[in-house]
Structure formats: structure tokens, C-alpha cells
Image (cartoon, rainbow, N blue to C red; front, side):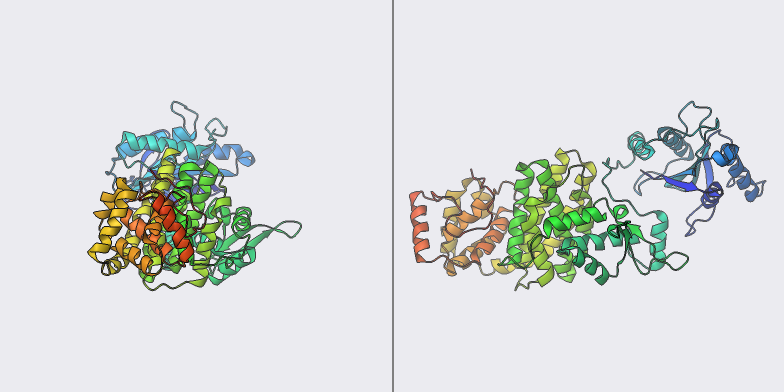
Length: 567
């Protein structure tokens, strides 16, 4: 159940609100509008007065609601109308008028508009014009001339809505923490429909601004990227001429004067105010995006593989920073992915956006490697022969998002947990579309049975706790192929396998063979060690069968290895 509070101002605010509630609606969506409850139980009902002119009944209702406001004259508050639509979920049962009346009374009591038993409370009505919703309208002067005490009424109403959901067996929404982005209004949705947009302007702007923040190396590039994506920017300047904030608009979204409708960055999302955008750019844009050499797909995948370790072992601020970086990765991935995957990846990014914010302040210091690698992917669009880079990055991202679900759950971030879980569904669909063809192609080149037995023997010695799962995994043939290819490129297959096993535990891997396939593919595409290095590695391996005496990453150097978790 979703209640939302809207305030109205001006001498005709009550008339406008009541006129809308008993009218046809902006898209003729109002069906049989009628009162289900009121402050006194017998207010005039313009929708159910068959022997009266509806306009007369409406004028009488407006006059009665406005009476306490008119009594104050010039001392009346600026905001005189409190309007709260309350909508049930599509899958909820259809409630009766009596049930909606009870819900309305509970909402106005929770908000401080009309506390239970208060005979001098504000005047209010609840209008129903659809099976799944009511609109509550009240005037913001009590009948004794005082103002209602409605501090933090939005939070109070949301808390009451959660109780109502339980009492009436409705879909239970997640409790928020005040860090969520503002939802588009009904008016914005209808306007988007008229403009032929797939989404409301607010949502379109949020996506484009977030993507520009993720892609830009500095503030100048940020504004250039917005211009390139048809976003109009209007800066708010201080007395010194410095920019203090910025508003965003789309060219096609205009008001009745033909002027663009601007949205402040902070109203698109709490992290899109100009000061927070600048802070993000300063943290992640301190070095050119092209300074690192190597395959950016591999670098991004390796960095994403370390996110679960950060979430499990770092302090909360650093862990929150990893979630921000993960969101940045998802924002940019649809641009670099094949067209067939973009819809699911964009849905994953839109869902995970909610999981990137909480009351915990993010420390982004440890996120630069992932951020810069994804920026290079976005800028250079590095091509691969079979899509392996995207597949291995998505594999790492899937595990990271699964850890994000658990992290938010342990911190009791209900909305963020649900958002991450929703993103996981879309990512799994996209991953299946890109990974299955790659894994099938690798499996078709599987080496001889003798070679596979040799690899299997080492697995059984190195990780006996996972060996059976790996050997029975559908991706075992693909894993054997990349091991054989690494060996053909001059690597020691045993050493490469040990290095892959040492990068991170397989305990949380949905498919350990698949996880190892991507790790070994990255390792195998690096330069093979020379004869001396191979001899040294062979000596180390000989000291202890199965697992080298040295750290498992000895031999072929790995950049920024996380601590190994081997049993």
C-alpha cells in the first residue's frame, strides 16, 4: 500500500482538489467517484447525490472543508490542503468501501490530521474512484483555529500503511530509510504517456545523469555527456557566480508556456545533487581512465570478484562504497553490451540503483580499480572474439549482487535488499544469454580424456571439498578446455589452476566450474612465464603435492589479489 502526501496552496486549492477527485481524471480513469468517509460522517457527497446538482453538492462540500481556513483570514497558513492518495497493489484483494473508510481514518489519525477522538481536528474526506485506491483530502486548519501537529507525517503515514498491510492481508512493502529516490507522480506518468515516452521524465533523467556521473572523468566531461544525451542543464549560481546546484530537463517535456520542466538533481535522487556529484567525480576521477594497461574486461571482472570479500570483511563505510561502485558498473554495462542484452541490463541497473544508497556514508577509496576499468570499457568498447569478457564480468557481478542482498539483509535495509534481489533476476537472464554460447563453444573443444583425468586428479588433491561438484558440473568440459589452452600457451596448468583456486573461495559460487573457467581464461591470456619461472614454480609445487608451498598466486603475478580463503 502506497500513501503519498501532496500539499496545496492558494485561495482555490480546496476547490481544485475536490474538483479533480470528483472529475473524470486526466485520462478518464475516475470511475464512480464517491465519498467513503469524512470528518463528521455526513458530509455532502457530489458523487452520490441523485436528487441534487453535483455542482451544488461539490460547492457545499468545498465550503464546509474551507470554513476553518476562511475563519483565519490573512492568518491562514500558506499550504491549506493536505492531499494523500492511497493505492493498493495490483495483486491485492478488492476492498469494500467500509474497509477503505477504516483505512482513511487510520491514515489521518497517524498523520496528525484527525487524531482519534479529537472533536476539533481538521476536516477531511476520503474519495474512492477506483477499486484499488482512495484519495484523502483535508484542510490544514483545525476546527478550533489551530494548526494540526503533523510533524514527519510522511513517515508516520508510511508506518501506519505497513500495519494496515498486515491487518488486511495486503502485499507488504519494504520499510524505507529515507534514502530512496522520489517516485514519479500520477501526473508525470500520464504526461509521459502523452509524450510517447516509455518512462516518466524523472526516471529518464535519473538514468542519464547517473550514467554521466559514472562515465565522466571530471565535471566538464560530465556536462558534455549530458548535452550529448539531450539533457538540458540549468545551473544555480551563488552571489559569487559559482555554481551551487543544477537542474535537469528533457527538451520534449515542457509546461503550458512551452518551457522545459526542470528537476533538481537532489529530487531525482539523494546522491545527484551537484555537491555529491562533485564529490563522486573527485574520488573516482583522480587519474586518466587510459593509464592502466591490459584487458579492461579482465581487470573489471577481477575487481568485481573482490566485492564479496569487501562486503564480508571491510567496515560498513568501505562496504557501502563497494555497492556504489557496483551500481556504477551496472549503469555503464548496457552501453557496452550487445543490443540483445541491453533491456535486461538496464532493468538490472534501474533496480540496483536503490541498493546503492543507505544511511551509511560510502568510502570510495577502494573502488577505483573497478570504476576505472569499467570507464575504459565504456570509452573504448573493446571487442572480443566470443563475448567472454562480458560473460566473466557478469559472472563476478552476479556473485557480488548476491552478497549485496545478504549485506543489506544483515543491516536491515529492507528496500535495498529487495532492490538487489530484483536486480539479480535480470542479471541472471542477461548472463544466461551471453555465457551459455561461450561455455558451449568451449565445451566443444574439450581436450582428451587423459588430459581431463590429469586435471581432475589435481583438483581432487587441491580442493577435495569442491572436486566432486566441479567434476559433475555442466561447465567441467569448458573448464578443462581453458586449462588445456593455458597449457598450450606456455603456462603450467597446475600452477594456473592453483592460482585460480587461490583468488577467492568457491564456497559461495553457484557453479564452481564456471567461476574457475572465467578465472583461468583471464590468467591464460596473460604472458606465459619463462623457463626459469616455470622451473621455480615446478620446484615449489613439488614441495607439496597438489598445493604449492608458496602462496598460490606465486609464478604468474596477479594484480591486487584479495586474501586467499582456502581450507
